[in-house]
Image (cartoon, rainbow, N blue to C red):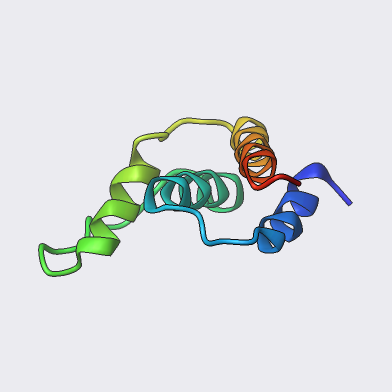
Length: 85
């Protein structure tokens, strides 16, 4: 099992849900690692959550899969450490 796959499992062991900024970080790194650069149109004004997610992912356009996986793993490790694990 890769460190990226392990981090995907470990993030589910947190004792509380991460805040929105941390969730956006996890989302953008996961999407970049698994799907590559963002594609499609930016969601409309009424889809606020979708716009935040799209913008976060678009902000790391061009990041390699390996770098995105490493950033995801580092983020999960930081959350686990803050959670006392």
